[in-house]
Image (cartoon, rainbow, N blue to C red; front, side, top):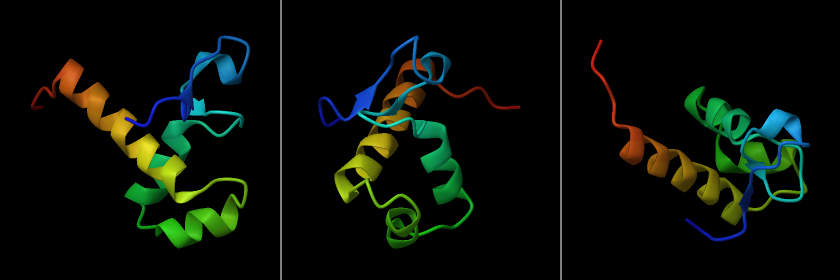
Amino acid sequence: MEQGRISIDPDIMGGRACIAGTRVPVHIILGHLGAGATTAELLAGYPFLNEADIRAAIAYAAELVEQEGVVAA
């Protein structure tokens, strides 16, 4: 994961993982991507973000899945 692009601060967004320097939670970025949004669409909607922020959100989620594992339903 790109260091410093994801922040967790209990005083910002209830401690949810966010893109550093913003109040945009990682789960919002991932939700948009999961719904089919493109990186270009995300950047148009959040012009203060950049492609490295989007990649960092995906990498953060990948790390969490690797650490926690996935339990089949």
